[in-house]
Length: 635
Ligand code: DMJ
Image 1 (cartoon, rainbow, N blue to C red):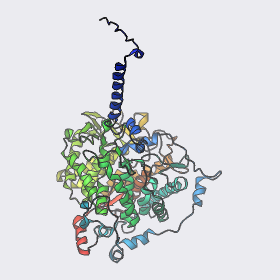
Image 2 (image 1 turned 30 degrees about the horizontal axis):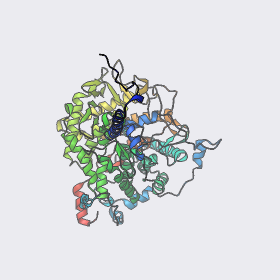
Image 3 (image 1 turned 90 degrees about the vertical axis):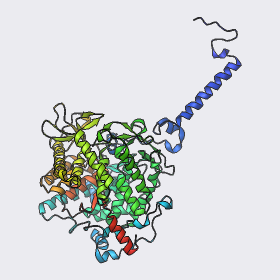
Image 4 (image 1 turned 180 degrees about the horizontal axis):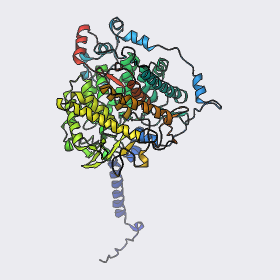
């Protein structure tokens, strides 16, 4: 086709007529308006949107999420934040010089708080912390005060003699674990006090960006462990820090999941164990800050929340199509129910019951729960199913919600056992060498890999065994033992006797990592957690033996001059340390080891459930609570 040159119109824009220029400008300005307007419709996680829309939205949280974020965080290069010891001073000499404050003994606190007459003396709070939202949510009659809950326990929380085992050899092992805790804590105190974690090689603190500007994750995560172990001077230091320095007025972007399991869980446990009102008021203040995360079309919270007044929330940038993660929004139930009980405000329970309702109703591929769900449409975003990272603690919280409700939460029970059926049908596999493992499921195709995180499932299936259908009880207990055995194998097959982040069962592999990137160990608790539950359920001595193997391996390969560090390769004994003492090492790994070597009457499972960060929460015995409230008029 031939174009004829119009008179007076040159090929360049310079030669355009006035009217044409006007049309062109109009088109251009329309385009700009359209582009800017489109920003509002982008998923919240898109960085461009956050740059343009609001000042508080410009500091993206760069870590991953759910149960996998700690792993991603640890792979980043350490940033030196200072606080090295003075020249010539080793960490051990500094440790010896640490000043000691006068302590309040746990025995004293226990005496004050425990049973009978002493309990009568406990004064109830005169004024309650006011809940955030409207009065219609108040459920005064059911409020679960410290006194009420103590009366509704079947046994004393700390046992006859704080769980001290009568066998001297086991007691020595327990003492060793206590020494490890003290060592880890003292070094944290010396080099990283108030920061989130200790960097034990460079001897400084790490803050990271998972907690939205909140500090002291290691302190909050340690409160109950220190208390249970009877490290009272250390516990008192931790409590003092919460009183004077835990600042909840942060304006940063936090992982809702991580803040919930570590801070909310840690403060709740500290309150239930000690009765200190300080912990209660802090946790209620923090709980309120998490509520805006649920302001989505479905009520399914997004993964990242601004803890400041904006309360804005986002989905993780890496989660497909602005989705929320199953292990994140499915791991709020235990803590949120307790927030309602303590505040007298039902809103927390309503939020998590809404999540439960949606998950109960939605169609599930082969009865399985995929890892990603849209908080806007309420539909699954893709069909990746895992009992490890991204899925794990959702299943854990179903059975624990049932147990914590004094076995009254029938929906949780039904959902747990049908999920377990689907998992057994679709994911549980037997390797050529006879090891039972949980594979991952990608839209019907199996990936024969098991993550370290998935090793918690031995314990989970164990604690749920008794409440399943009668004919399946022994089967569940056997399955729990088999999974725990496989996870132990992933430890014994390495040079360090510590397990890799993920191990495989294909291409000739049997419970070993085949990829370099899966060989690391970051002080994770899941395998030891299953040993602890299996010990309590069976008293088979092998679980204590396996736990002791882990203690020795931790001592040999993870203990450095100034704390404990993860290692980059479990298959090589010339350790390369990752320079991070994770806060869950203090809250979970060492606590589970300590409980493994203690008598069962220390935090008996009849009365306590452990949240996914190993913070113990008491059962809610509704009828007992109501009786007590009616009898005493107390809350
Ligand atoms: C902990 O924060 C919790 O156990 C969580 O559920 C999974 N990841 C870490 C420990 O590995």
